[in-house]
Image 1: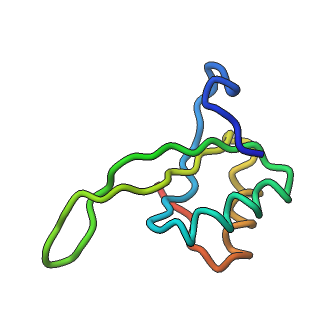
Image 2: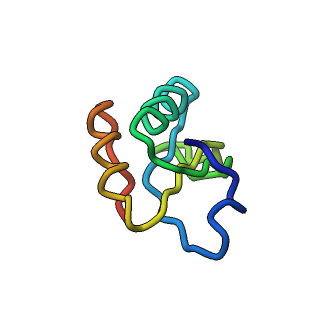
Image 3: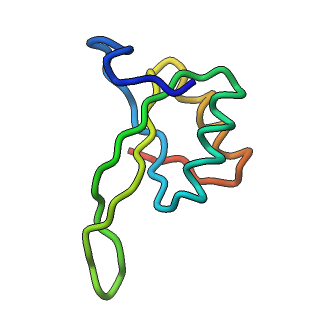
Length: 85
């Protein structure tokens, strides 16, 4: 279920995915919620483009370290590639 960052207190959260489009973010939110996974979403910028690099805005999905693998399984189920650090 989507939570505000304050819900996680002082815990470090791991980035599992950067949704570049709303059409990626919405199904991912639904799938994480259906799986019972608590997550936080934050809008932030990332660099995109091969030839013409630019700053773009995306939805960054974060989860607690102990449930990273479960969240990655949900991503793979949606045919999305989890963020690798």
